[in-house]
Amino acid sequence: MTQRRLLGEDIEAIYDELTDGRRRSLRVSELVYTAAERFPGLVPTRAAIDEERERLQKDKRGLEIDQGTFVAHVLAHPRAGAHLMHAVSQPRPDAMALLGDLQRDGAVDLGPIRVDRDGSVGVVSIQNHAFLNSEDDISTGALEVAIDLVLLDDSIEVGVLRGAPATHPKHAGRRIFGSGINLTHLYFGKISLVEFMIERELGAVSKMYRGHDLGMPEGGDLEDRREKPWIAVVESFAIGGACQWLLVMDRVIAEQDSYFNLPARKEGIIPGCANLRLPRLVGERLTRQAIFFNHVFEADSAEGRLIADEVVPGDEIDDAVARAATELTSTGTTSLIANRKTLRVAQEPLDAFRRYMSNYAREQARCLYSPALIENLERNWDAKRRSL
Image (tube, rainbow, N blue to C red; front, top):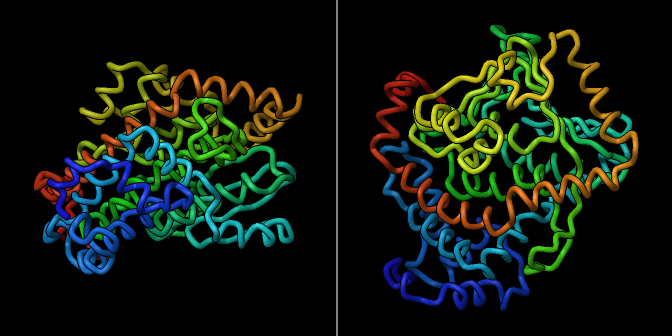
């Protein structure tokens, strides 16, 4: 079967065969590789993708474009798309396996990410120190596990996302929230479309925003979820994907000298769901400036305060986080979660998110294989001089 035939096939019938009539839940990565086995030629096999990952991005054959097109068609279908989003919203098996460790020890170290329980607060620390807390396939998978653990631990009421003190000699002891996608990994072909670009949005980021879906896979608009409020603590900067995290937070606390920006177009890609969410915070004109012209939001500015709720000196950050966590839980979490949910349902219905992600899957795949992406990386990132 070819991609051309897919466009004329019933995508629902294909999806139902892959998921045994929607009785089986598959994450996006599981879905595309199952499809490769059941429908040879429809999408590339895992072996083919693994071989591609050994090449520079500019030397790849563009096999992931077929994956993006396939996922786009699944998400575009209301029933199949809803079922797929439900599947990715579930706790990962590795998180379920580690839950007992968090409950017993109060901490789980996942390498680039760490989770600590401090009373009723679950602190997720970003510690991908070798790359200034940039994102890659491994760190994004670890982040989703950490978010799952915070959501699953019943003694935790609030999640906090924060950069750990850096160990790099140039930034030793400084907390850095995040520097976006690992551009070196991108140039060297180590960033995946499915496990990073797509599952990041449907998994880690969506779980901070929506939590775990406890309802039926096609439960309609009545949401039943395990969710908790989240606080982001921005010190130094929130670049690219780190800035995208801020758009789903219930409280953003920023250091006075910090800043936020979205240089994805300069890199040649789509900045996740920022195109969907940033206009709600800053308006469409500023969104276009941010995405098309790399506008920087200084935290301690009128524009920056459209994203950050509280901007304080560095030595007041800890107190600000404690106050916010206390305020969020002081009158119980029932009405808090109810208000959080109803705000979200009004602002970003699941169908709107599904349609956005359908287009995103296809267009991001095309961006990844645009010659302009390599030109941008070599011009703006000096990628040729870097090494893994």
